[in-house]
Figure (cartoon, helix red, strand yellow):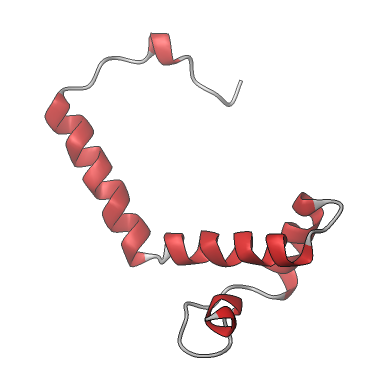
Length: 79
């Protein structure tokens, strides 16, 4: 199975959990993950496709996200 059994996972020390969380936050900031997810959620909600997964796959393949640098972003256009 791709999913791990949480009960089988060793408990992490609080500092390790905190470090892992901070590392994840920094990663998300460096790679504009919040902006990326927000952009695609807005696109899905604006289009309201019958199959959101297929729509998202098409968006990712044919209209990839670029971090907001102007009016190219759907988010920027809505502001």
